Length: 159
Image (cartoon, rainbow, N blue to C red; front, side):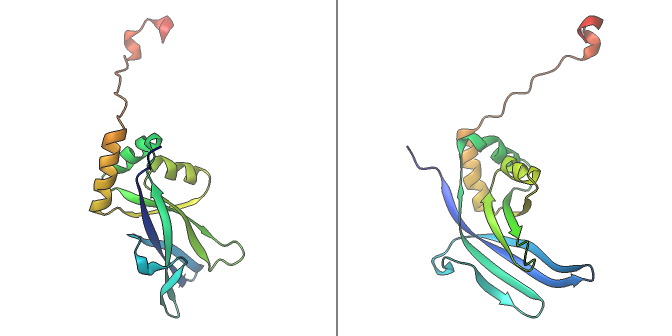
């Protein structure tokens, strides 16, 4: 069995303390970056002051699957391809959050959102788009659209 194409990435998340009078904490995905040797194996705080904390979460494998071709195609043809990041907030300590998964499939992100998961996105850089486009071109062919005959041309008993 041939290995599937994959890339390893890290997710940068930001936590804002009391961003407004209605929220105690606000979490957001800032970036998805290629893995580097110096990132280590666990989360690492990059920036922290009395209000803002930025954390690097390394070690996410983004693997491409032939059966997710439609999801990659939809991401690429959206006009602004993105990384989709599934992330969580700790129920007992809402100041803690972490990413769970990174994907490039529009369909996978949709399934996770349908399951009430938190999914945010950040722009996919040019080299990521080229890599995903090459895989999608080699493994996916959109279904040809079939013209549907308007109902007014059918006999009344066939409408």
